[in-house]
Image (cartoon, rainbow, N blue to C red; front, side):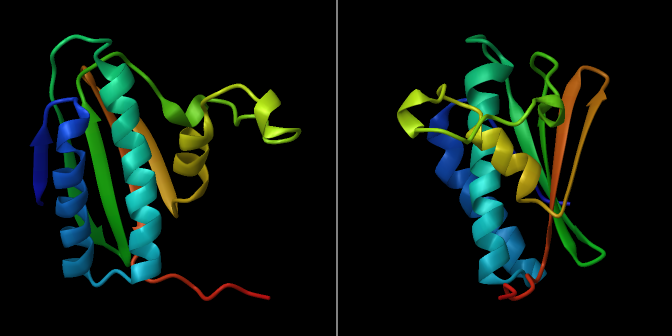
Length: 140
């Protein structure tokens, strides 16, 4: 299983995206599915960068595995315990200027994947984001 190791800063984001999209291409993922993967993965990584270590040094990794028609990417960090699957969805009604900032990235993580799981494995957060290698055509 390919694994990309990084420090929690945004300078590694482009290299992580290249790594994951390369894994997606090798697994035969469609362009539509890869676009969703790219958006959701970026949101998950930005959350790790901004929140996992609360300004302290640390590391995280992204592991990709193709199985059962899915590409699953696990984002693993050893920062503060945080389960993004338990965060209530943001209020998306009303004027945009009246809404609080934040929360949409986790909405993407929770709704744009085909399967998502979180575990606290020892002292590690493990967020697994799975995407079908092919996407069904939108129905009218």
